[in-house]
Image (cartoon, rainbow, N blue to C red; front, side, top):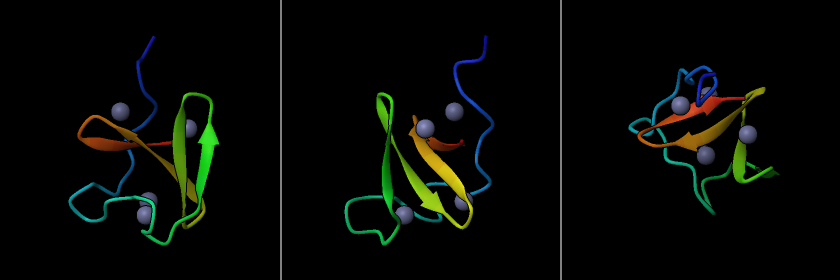
Length: 51
Ligand SMILES: [Zn+2]
Ligand SMILES: [Zn+2]
Ligand SMILES: [Zn+2]
Ligand SMILES: [Zn+2]
């Protein structure tokens, strides 16, 4: 079983999500997703997973 979903096409180098990054944060089980142009990003180590 994979420990993460597909990696998002956007990277932390392009944009770092945070409290005031302008994207809506959504609690998802044990982590926070950020709504991003129709998909969701979840921080995972050095990249974002797409949910
Ligand atoms: Zn991942
Ligand atoms: Zn994205
Ligand atoms: Zn953001
Ligand atoms: Zn998630």
